[in-house]
Image (cartoon, rainbow, N blue to C red; front, side, top):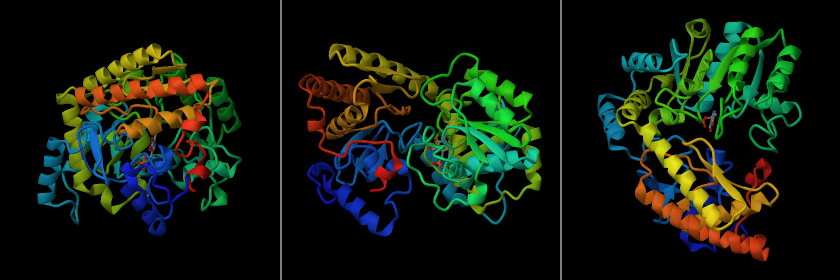
Length: 446
Ligand SMILES: Cc1ncc(COP(=O)(O)O)c(C=O)c1O
């Protein structure tokens, strides 16, 4: 498909806007995950103009069921009236001032009451921002520089520095990212370790025994690790005297209204939150033990908009609504239903695939022996044609109801039929009308 080819007319305006954006915005989007090449280029919408509940309307006027949920940020649904009214009332009082507002303390106390590791709190405006604060605090508190990490933790220098050494982010983010603009002096300061492998982590801790500040990791994404793994990481952190930081930006408040720690029974020294904490309003938080956090009072960690009351008001209201509506239960029930119904459709079409994963973030996976990149592309393309916006996983929010589920399952049934035929007739590649999806960065930046 050529850049100028908007053969699938449904998203023609989206694609025009995308070309226009390229002229004035390097990379065209602010977030890699919003690039249409991450979905089905030319078929998936690229620009939304409004959202409600579990759906958004794109620039062409199409309404899509949305299983990406604002890349996880939307946990109660778009335009939730209670969250939005709370934010609107806050606007009437002023979004921020020359001095602090008491709701900063209110949110800090709420997080401390709720999250097992939280005794002190700092705020931020996003996930990468909050991760960078946590790393500064860990380095400042321990007086050590090196970070061992596992997973994705945002765009900042401390993390991208890993790719100054070979292509260390290949397994944690995606291949092909050049650390352009990251100071070469940071080489060796961020070292990745593989997930679910305690021996590999201990080997890295032994290798860097004297100068490691912290283990920074996503405790999980779509599946639980082996039994005892995360407790084993906690024990290793204690054994080698390093801080343990859980990046809960992606798991967020879907597992429970207190995040993932109550389910895991493992308590880190510091945890990082953003996205679902505030149902789509800019917000992030770093929470941790008094011992780990208090030295931050002496560190220069300071920014004007971290006191912005709109994100803070949205976070307080979202956290309270999650609890009073039992929204996590709703999300888990939707996930269980989707896994059950999609698995039944997989069986009905005898597809070499499965639908599994944690209840709040299930995913569809085609058997590894097949060309999964092509099959995923075909799936996403055909779902987009049926006005369902998704990759191959479901980022569930509490506003996904019967209508969204029914429309999605109807579409999946039709798409699985196409895929069954494509596999039988060996024409999967022929049915791809878009750019085959890839996880490599270079392909994303045209
Ligand atoms: C685990 C994790 N950490 C950090 C980030 C970065 O958050 P943000 O995009 O808000 O900067 C993300 C974003 O996807 C994430 O999933």
